Length: 340
Image (cartoon, rainbow, N blue to C red; front, side, top):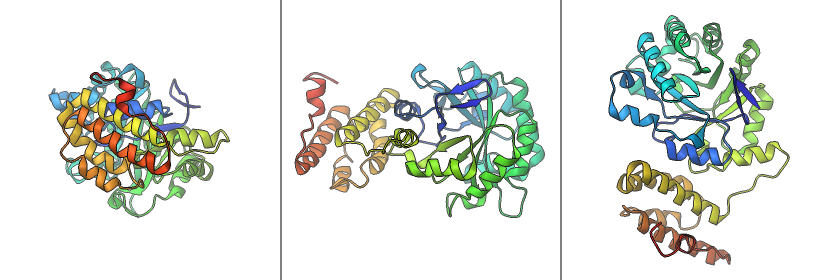
């Protein structure tokens, strides 16, 4: 179990915030499959305080996904504090500050990873947020801006001094983006110097790597990001391995059911047309390694409604099942003849 401030999580596995990915539908799915904590996409503090309707959509949540961490980003301490009060009012169980995003459009504003070049600004922001934040406060950083500049240990100590309840380290430098390999030695070094929980992030793409990270670094929790895109079962697999069981791959029926459920949830949130567009990119990850997957994804290109999508899924997975000599009931048989 992992405790952050007064909040006790059911396990040590955390879903990383990912732009365009960790919306409400995806958070619900990974929560059902074992995540101990889920996180929103990063949300602009300025957008919240300016009452931008689009920004507020990122705060859509469900009781089922609780506890929920809401991640905000920004440069101005006062704006960050005001946004914190707003997300707490919107039922955030944890407030997380993004101080590591390497995206150019975020760096140009002085936010995200750019803050790692400004330790005084880090101190000002964390202190301002802490003063108004009644729930646990966490901060996500990287190894530093670039090699040779003030690094994760220096920044992490400032964050701890300012009252954060936990810190997440992605041990790549901002200038690396996602290239190269995450240096877990940096994570271990930070862990030895802090009293608050340290959560590791970076290059956890299979169950054994999650356990290996904890063993090598001593980190208190593991945050999983890109490895779970198209593979939300990763959380359950890690829990199984940690409990002494051999992690299993999802059955065809499980894979199909999750894809359909993801589309259903996206349709409820975005409408069927926008959900169809969003699913096209996700299908690349969901069907990776399956036979004839590129042909199936091609057939999905013109689909803009739920019923047609179910038919395409039944055809594709039915073919795979026959090839493997398996019996997989169609989704229409599960749902009945009426509307889903």
